[in-house]
Image (cartoon, rainbow, N blue to C red; front, side):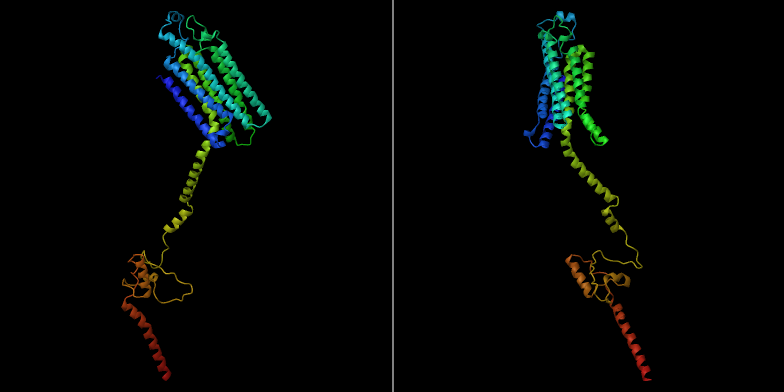
Length: 407
């Protein structure tokens, strides 16, 4: 298959995808197929005509190898056998180009009509509605003019596929200068007018400048169609002998650009629904992560937990599983040493005999830990000394007082 035919089918598939996304977006926005507007149906009609245009481009480039009744010298016309394959291909290729011209114009002007209906739904001011009505009249009248010009510029109609004698430049459908220039002028004129309808309304709004610029660019998609039209016209006028092979390809490119740019404004609402919530979620997550890494609440807690404790006069050694019992504010002070005082009082590593140590050991067994009942006891020798020393001192003082009283 010729690469031009492959390109035509690829563009057709992309055009169908764009139109399908547009219809899906409209259904999601307005709430059902029954609420589709006339511009939506016009775009569906344009899509079907675009597929027909791709088929005729396939016939002209693949089946008939780009042959038409142009690009041939008078001597070749005279000597070409009417029963030959080339002669038949040139005749059929010329007929294909006549039909392809009509389909090409129909697709472009159907898209222009869809733009007009779309504008008619948007504007409510009487003066702007009059501009839209005039735009509809301009589109319809220019389309009728082109159709009549293509059908009446070469009479009789069979001269469009005549090989010998030479039918003249107007009867060469693939590269007719009259058809090329007429379609180009009316196409540019209507696109300019349709672009100029929404721009004054956008500039009169109170939107910010970037938003105004974006809307103007969005509704100026016809400018890209005009660029494609200029390129197509230049190629056909510059290389008329190759009109049979390049006319259909450039027509497909121009109509694809028209379909793309006319559907983007109606696809954007669906794109916003798809991407803006996800973008907002991603931005909120980034803000949270940034706040935590830059000193947010979580990082402050982590910093406080990881900050080393203030130095004490004497370093305390505690087990990681030491259980601390809360102390009531009404409790009286006792002389019983606690686990917090063990490190400051020089206790030995023997098992505890006190009631508190037994409770701590039992609690440690409940959590399946054996490290609780360690590093908390006094030796028997030190406890006995600690208990007898005060008693002996008090007894000695009482004996001295009695002796002095007797004297």
